[in-house]
Amino acid sequence: MTRSPAEVTRGQAVAVVGAGLVGGGWAIVFARGGLSVRLFDAQPGAAASALRLIKEQLGAMHAAGLIDDPTGVLRRIQFAETLAEAVDGTAYVQESAFERTDVKRALMEDLDRVCALQTVIGSSTSGIPASQFVSGLAIAPRVLIAHPVNPPHLVPVVELVASPETAPETIEFTRDLMESLGQTAVYVRKEIEGFVLNRLQGVLLREAWALVEDGIATCEDIDKTIRDGLGWRWSFMGPFETIDLNAPGGIRDYAVRLGPLYHSIARSRDQSRPWSPELMDEVERQRRDLLPVEKLAERRAWRDRVLMGMAASRKKEQV
Amino acid sequence: MTRSPAEVTRGQAVAVVGAGLVGGGWAIVFARGGLSVRLFDAQPGAAASALRLIKEQLGAMHAAGLIDDPTGVLRRIQFAETLAEAVDGTAYVQESAFERTDVKRALMEDLDRVCALQTVIGSSTSGIPASQFVSGLAIAPRVLIAHPVNPPHLVPVVELVASPETAPETIEFTRDLMESLGQTAVYVRKEIEGFVLNRLQGVLLREAWALVEDGIATCEDIDKTIRDGLGWRWSFMGPFETIDLNAPGGIRDYAVRLGPLYHSIARSRDQSRPWSPELMDEVERQRRDLLPVEKLAERRAWRDRVLMGMAASRKKEQV
Image (spheres, rainbow over the protein chains, first blue to last red):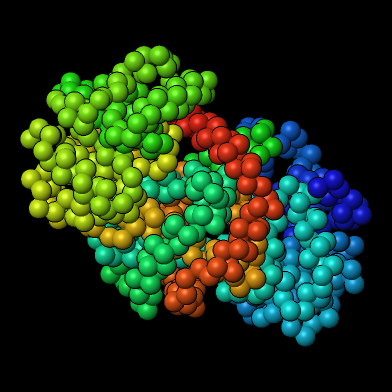
């Protein structure tokens, strides 16, 4: 973490392709780190609405003490008219296009034509392995997944997932770049469905939904169990460190004591059924009782304010 | 939450049986709420070491701005010489004895002899259903599980788990008492292995350990994924609200989009194997590289300071 983002890219700009919520967040991450950013979106009008959103978010970040100079950050973000113009002379391209394999493949074919030989390309996909859209292209060794949590300018984690064709230098460069930007790079060593983040989220959600289906607890009581219980320690230590500190002798001691219980719980749960339409209705009903659909947007704004507060306090403490 | 703890107990004291780490934390919770507490432990010397620990913790809480008057809180905690003396005239007994069914059963038989007819008894067990140690006793309708996260005076959640014999008034009384004390009561409607909290922790840990076993990610990278990613939102929203805000149309919309992925992830994982000794060695090795065993105590103190900071900021924000 000694090098600055500009040192990692050797003074070159970066490009963000796809100017939706995720792409806009990425533009902020790069520009906040001092890099020149070229933002491109093929859809008409996308640039204008991205600009509006980015301005709003920079204002909120400034108010929360997360950035000092919102105007300076904004000035580093330029909109490009074409893909070729966007990627010209860039060290890195963050692909944040629509989440569909055929869309990603078409875009990668375009990037294969217009990118310089050294440009590294990270895909924001939350679940499509790179080998499904990049195989056989000349750029394949320079492509990997760089999957952020939304919004990337507030939550630091980025999953780096290599395809079998990704070159080691590509992983190394992207890790250096992300860490120089203050993101937390997590290295996923093999392509696996859901990567790490969504696998962990998925297993917890499967158990949570099953507990509602079986009438054991309500959605709200399960949320309370996490947000006023397990979630506190997980938000600054993670699950391994949590249990390492929870037995006198450390994690092995803990595993010997509690491993059999967790194994028994895992085996007791039948995973053959999908979430039924009736269960979805029930969960939707419980959530809408707590938060009417017309209040979703307001609550999302609240969530982002809380996340900004957390980011600001992390920044202060350098946890 | 309009009534004070003393109003819920009608001015009566409470007892804590078992003066270890959990029992001592409970004594702080009750005394902080203004209740007179009688602490009892059959083991010689337990009272003295509990008193030392409680004093230390009250000092730290005072320094963190969590309590105003540590001396006043301490003054409300009295040590009892016998079980009968401890429970005499109390509205509520928090059982925090050793985590073994035979120990709990013997203690419940003793409590059956000495408790007044109206006394409610909550057990701190993290996993033994009440029916396994209270069946057939006259007190059975007044016994339930009140399982805290450690330490209970810092992390608010308490799981209330009824046995088939628990009376509805017992659940209602304990919920009122816990909420009047500022704890977060979660109602688990049926006895189930691991209750809710450890089932949720267990499924996440099973996936995390399997990812390490399969060479997908290191313990540290998995911890990063949670602590710099998923854990932030879970620490103030919980998993249901998180996904409710993560799709334009709310949770049903989210479930339709991502349910099939999570189902596929769940089915892809074989749960037949326990954690092998080799896997335990590997995880232990990775953790000890990050934190030598002689630093565990120091890191636990750091964890408690961070938790105190979180509790203080929750108290301020009234989240």
